Image (cartoon, rainbow over all chains, first blue to last red; front, side):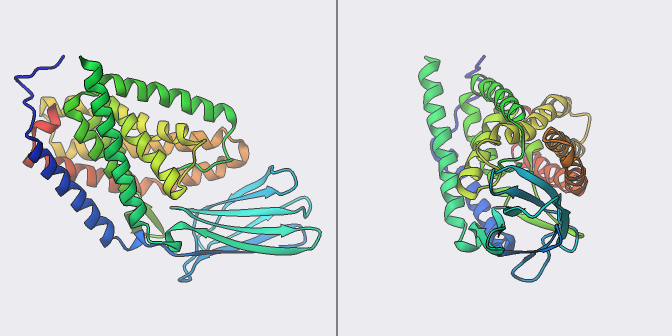
Length: 164
Length: 198
């Protein structure tokens, strides 16, 4: 139950100034955080027999530690194996055979690198998909914050319409 | 703490969506007009904290703050966290759309639990706000890491080592998140104490 006497609505100008200060503080945090501007990651793999060895590292040379590695069979899309990288960014997985595979290293925060092996041509292909390095993430974050504000604005109007 | 696409079985994904939909529906039903700006701010904070990384020993963690969101938003935490995770999936490919339900549940259910457990502490004022905040932040991350690990286990036995590792790497985060939640609550107590009890 609402209690109008207890919860006086704040003046709009005051709400607006609070919102402005909040978003300004968030933006400062974000711009001062060096990790907001992430690095490209690299994934290199090689077969020794049917054992797949691999290594993931950032462009600065730091290993991609404790991150999930998923190996997919390219012929049917099935997940063949899963593991995590070590503290050195390395991993090794024993496979029963050498099918065409795609190895996906997911370092979080949109950092993703893949290594594809084609069994017929016995050639490997590497690709990095790194949103944060490809472009400055701040515009996308700003868009996200605006989307949140719009969503709750619409929700506010919807609640008001259904309250009467 | 996002689970990516293509790992979890369909039953887990569907269960996550069903439970999260119930939570969001409860949030939509209970949220009041005066909570709207606060919930939007908490959702924004949750959205942005994923980008603030803290190097800690051999690993690198980012804040979660779902305990703070839960404590201040109540059932509306499902809306705040759900919309933030949806935008993270759409804009940054964190997690995914199929795993949105599970990821929302893993973050918002501990947040709701913290609201139910710790909000009475703020009302009775017998326990220092700092301690309440620390416990709230720590417990929420502990439960989220636990739920995340359990979600991974449903993907099969091959994911058990990964689930254990994910849980272990989040232990330091419990303390860091607890500390930041405690400091945030202490600050709110000084500048706007009515926010803690309303």
